[in-house]
Length: 452
Image 1 (cartoon, rainbow, N blue to C red):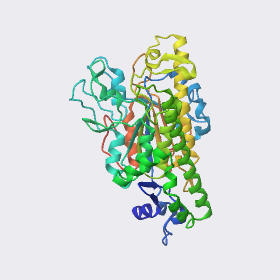
Image 2 (image 1 turned 90 degrees about the vertical axis):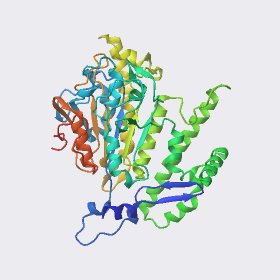
Image 3 (image 1 turned 180 degrees about the horizontal axis):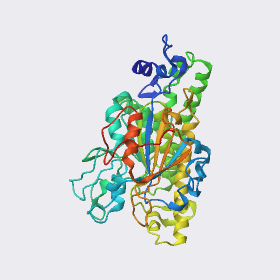
């Protein structure tokens, strides 16, 4: 029944070289059979996303002072006030395999490679890298065939697949959180234009390539190519779905305009001998939000149900001048108890959380079924390190947003016993997207406490 309902609700607008996936419309949903429940017929999928931030956090301004419902958001998490009731703050979770365990220094590289795998990476800067399959890629291998793209991997800093990036660890560990197998990291895309074209252009046929070149040369919108099909679809929809289609197409056009604007800025900034990073905004916040917008649209159109995002690579030393912090992030993370550095770190942490709040707000603003798109998502956010100075891997800063299709009770701070494996949460997430696994990394069982 799920497959039939899913296919009947998925629609495409087509034009020359363009194939624009659409959200589901109630007007086109199948009628209920005798005795069938609306939930069974809706075919509403559950999605999972994971967002990585580097260098840990300023823990005293991250952990709420009380557990359960009604907790007060600490300073770093205050930007999440509008979605607090859609959020679980999970304290006490640990990645033991992010520790040295005899391998010596290299905590930052391990923090990224272990983030979604829970596996000890082999210490090497050669081609014989080894980690473990990540939770997102396990899900993609099980349920990825139900969508156009098994998974979506995004980021804001390009990475390298070779070389020494951290005390003898390959750059592949620092640059990737998605691993299709023990030896196969899944590279991320950092250019919003390329993600946009991947989501909205048809397969790369001759017509598709010509259409793309023509659109970019003439600066025409992708919506111009599907206008006729869109008008035809409007006539078959109910009033609420017509409004839903209008809002969706307006959102796509807004993203397209933002990409065009960032490309124009890049051309103005680039010198005659500088390669123009087409589609990559000059402002970091704009870059993050564009990539998050892509994730929203991918989930909204059921183009994928699995996505990852790296705000920055492990040990990133990016500066944050735009929020008054000109220092490098990694340098600041080695604060040695300096209160001035503490203040700057918590400003960086709050900036990152502000971008998360934007993403969750976008998901929550999109109606889906009897709730919202956020209700049918699980969004994991956090770092593979707790305190950047200690390089410790216990009591990791972890958030889980969304209701997992009604299987999670958010709005709480849940404090777990020290050394509870973060991978236990991964098993619980896999159960909820229909991809149960016997284990992930160093998991010891499902994580209790996600429901009350």
